[in-house]
Image (cartoon, rainbow, N blue to C red; front, side, top):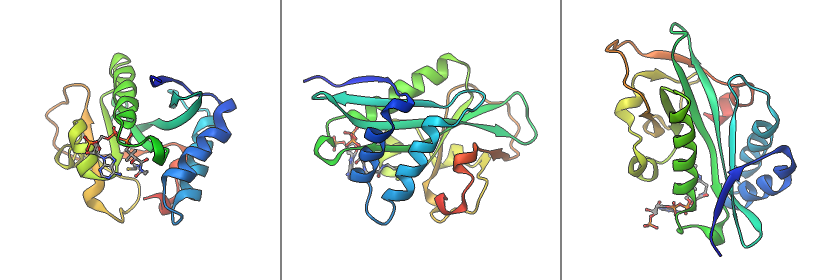
Length: 178
Ligand SMILES: CC(C)(COP(=O)(O)OP(=O)(O)OC[C@H]1O[C@@H](n2cnc3c(N)ncnc32)[C@H](O)[C@@H]1OP(=O)(O)O)[C@@H](O)C(=O)NCCC(=O)NCCS
């Protein structure tokens, strides 16, 4: 059966938690599932985007994009992609790529400047993210894996080379996530 992508709501909380509990290793799955649940209910301005992928009558993947703001530039608006998970039995079928592309399309249509991510460069590099672009954005906490910090530009940036210090939503304000 074909995969469909739709906006998630708080009613999807249990299924979204299950996606991340099954996708991530035991060392991190509880923390990620809790983050996903919090991002489903956190009221942010602009809004956090939660998308789910459905297949075979159930939710098999989830992605969240939450807004990040810049310390010095009030006109700049970014989003951070986290978390992303696909149930193991549905992986390698393009579902994560579709969730990312669908979210990025929505964000580019609303004038968002850049999307940041903290994850495997082998995976995100194929989808337009790069560590070089991310050098323009300083994360709010020290990173355990600095090579995982990547960004994709959705709009042309000014030539200002100074790194922007970013602030993220409440659910991500936990050094253990970084
Ligand atoms: C990473 C993850 C979201 C990818 O989901 P997916 O639906 O399988 O992704 P796609 O099918 O769109 O993947 C496309 C490509 O990514 C790479 N890829 C996907 N899963 C991979 C894996 N487990 N290991 C290595 N490469 C992988 C492959 O190159 C794949 O292309 P291919 O199938 O042609 O080889 C999924 O494996 C997952 O949930 N993993 C556990 C949680 C996690 O690590 N989340 C990301 C946090 S940064």
